[in-house]
Image (cartoon, rainbow over all chains, first blue to last red; front, side, top):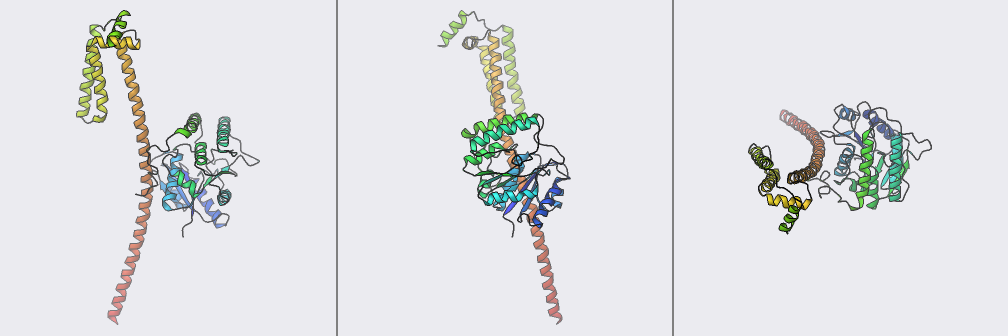
Length: 250
Length: 157
């Protein structure tokens, strides 16, 4: 019988890392640290051997024909989950920043009734240091998200999350942001009546590869996030008025 | 109303375009029409987009030929000369076109993204289905050869 939970790992150019991440999750399952879950790697059009390594490590792999962005990779993962009939989705990054041992905490938060379990690196006593611009951005958007949602959000950019079936039904829609799904998605969940809960997790430094949040992209990220948040109450839900053109089975 | 505006414009001593400016504007308008028709003939430009250009060319042509209208318009927007009214119109038109293209581009980007995602999902499902059917084929082939063997044995016995 297939597991009811799937772990989505969006990956772009993560050869040399993604295989280890998949194996590390398998190890946690074998050790009985976390319940049996299926692993789905969404290769976002990597020119390297990311997809092959993920498949060799035993993951189910979906490949984008070309690079579509982190948000789209996640979205494809959600859509596969929905089409396959999974009840819950966990998500983690492919670069080794997220510790698979922490997946249990996300699952527990979902068990306790959270719709979105958000793994935060800043709740721990020894929170990692990041660059100034990153810190300013995180502060600003955590403040906005916290005020809006009404509960303290410390790490809105975290890609280490767990989603309930209700949350999954909402994220498969076309309006899901294609590049940086962060504070805006959390606020959207809250507006949809879903329960967002932060869970303390330990995150490691990335082993290699490139962060999405670097250089001029940080400025664009800030602009985009502010605009999206400002538009949130008055914006049309999806670009083409069709709710789920990817997840729909037709 | 137009007559009034023209009078106001004339009071400001607005001069009509020089003959040479007029000729250049008319020639430009005709050139645009010819170019657009040629592009449509070669199927490099869709009819869908051609009308905007034709409409612009017609507008330029009409304004260049009908100086009264141009002077009235110039008075209306408060431009210094008739020629700058034409240029101003051209800039507004180009901006409108650019916005229109941005909108279309956004829509196309969304569609292309959706298609790419669906393709990725279907491809994965196809590979899965193929694997399954191959598995079934080999297992049914195995069954067939088994039953044939049984038949042979029966004949022998």
